[in-house]
Amino acid sequence: MAAPTVAKVTSVFRQKLFKDKVALVTGGATGIGKTITQELLYLGCNVMIASRKADNLKAAVTEIQGNLPGCDVRWTECNIRKEDSVKKMVSTTLEQFGKIDFLVNNGGGQFYAPTSEFSLKGFNAVVETNLTGTFLCMKEELNQSCLLSFMQT
Ligand SMILES: CCCCCCC/C=C/C(=O)SCCNC(=O)CCNC(=O)[C@H](O)C(C)(C)COP(=O)(O)OP(=O)(O)OC[C@H]1O[C@@H](n2cnc3c(N)ncnc32)[C@H](O)[C@@H]1OP(=O)(O)O
Ligand SMILES: NC(=O)C1=CN([C@@H]2O[C@H](COP(=O)(O)OP(=O)(O)OC[C@H]3O[C@@H](n4cnc5c(N)ncnc54)[C@H](OP(=O)(O)O)[C@@H]3O)[C@@H](O)[C@H]2O)C=CC1
Picture 1: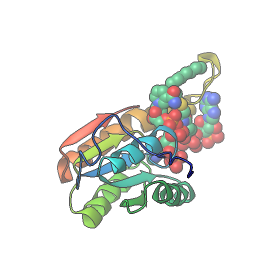
Picture 2 (picture 1 turned 30 degrees about the vertical axis):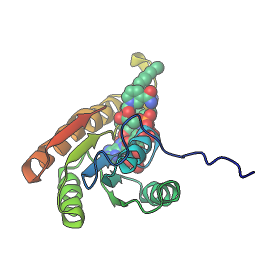
Picture 3 (picture 1 turned 180 degrees about the horizontal axis):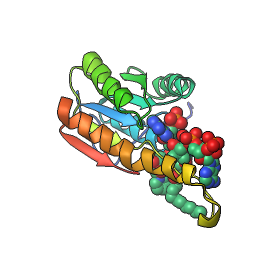
C-alpha cells in the first residue's frame, strides 16, 4: 500500500481563494515571511519576495517551488530602510506582475539586549527598519499601486 501523501503547505482558507492576485512580501525568504508567502501561493496568489540577502531569496524560491510545483514566486533585493531601494522593489514588482494587490510588511527585527546595553546605533537601526521601513513600503505602494496592506513588525 502506498504511503499517504502529506501536503507541505495548507491553509484554513479555500485553495485558490486569491487566484491571480499579486502579493509583495518583505522579508519573505525566511521565518514567518516564508510561511506567509507559501500560504499566499497555496491560495492562488503570485508572490514577489524581497529582502537584503540575495542568497536567502534564491534559496527560498527554490525551496518553495519544490513545495508548491507550478507556483509563481519571484525575488528582488530590497533594503526597506532606503527609499530608492523601496521604489525599485515596487516598480520591479509592477513591471513583472502588472499589479500589486497585497503588501505584507513583514521585513524587520530587533536585537536582544537589555536597554542599558543597547547602543543608540542599534536602536536607530531597529526604528529605521521596523517603523521607517514599513512607512516607506506603504507610501510607495500607495503611490504606485496597492490596495491592501498588512503590518507585522
Ligand atoms: C527579550 C525577549 C524579546 C522578545 C521579543 C519577541 C518579539 C520579536 C521577535 C522577533 O523579532 S524575532 C526575530 C526577527 N529577526 C531578526 O531580528 C533578524 C535580525 N534583524 C535584522 O536584521 C533587523 O533588520 C535589525 C535588527 C532591525 C537590523 O539589523 P542590521 O543587521 O541591519 O543592523 P545594522 O545596521 O547592521 O547594525 C546596527 C548596529 O547595531 C549594533 N548592534 C548589534 N547588536 C546590538 C545589540 N544587541 N544592541 C544594540 N546594538 C547592537 C550593530 O553592531 C551595528 O553597529 P556597528 O557594528 O555597525 O557599529
Ligand atoms: N518571531 C517572533 O516571535 C516575532 C516576530 N515578529 C516580527 O515578524 C517579522 C518576521 O520575523 P521572523 O520571521 O521571526 O524573523 P526573520 O529574521 O526570519 O525575518 C526577518 C526578515 O526581515 C528581513 N529584513 C530585515 N531587515 C530588512 C531590511 N532592512 N530590508 C529588507 N528586509 C529586511 C530579513 O531579510 P534580510 O536579512 O535578507 O534583509 C528577514 O527575511 C519581523 O518583522 C519580526 O520583528 C514580531 C513579533 C514576534
